[in-house]
Length: 181
Image (cartoon, rainbow, N blue to C red; front, side, top):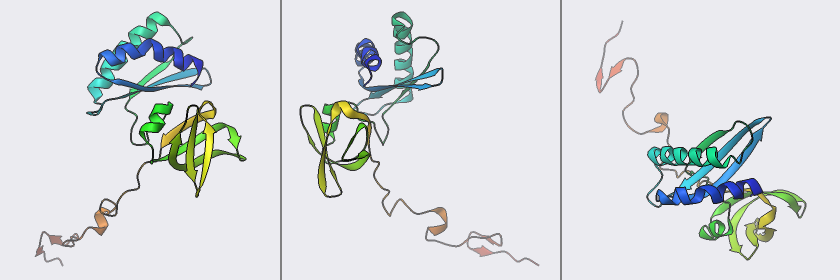
């Protein structure tokens, strides 16, 4: 995490926790002069839109007072989602055995991008099982990491065209045939 993200996290975490939620992580993105601050929240029972709105109001008020971002910024509050980003070592540990995508600031074995199973978490490192071998990386060198979303199962992969059942076309209504000339 960037120092500014750590500072913002420390400022807003108590307010998020007071609402019964967990501050999952923060991303501060720059696009030219524009800044977007993404705040990810989590909860065992799931995050609702109302949760995001409440956190947004609280965080906005805190940031107005603390003023950690110079100039205008856009605040986004959301759940981590299915491809949840991983920010901390305890988060990696929580998902041991899961598939993750990791992008590094500093290459390891000539690569900066890895996809593999989270195999082990150490004091300052994460180990991924990538293509049958273990790759260790310093947590401080991780630029971005997130879970790999699960592939859809065959049961859920059907499209409307592939569903079994009666065929319907412009000449058919239900199971009755309509005469056309």
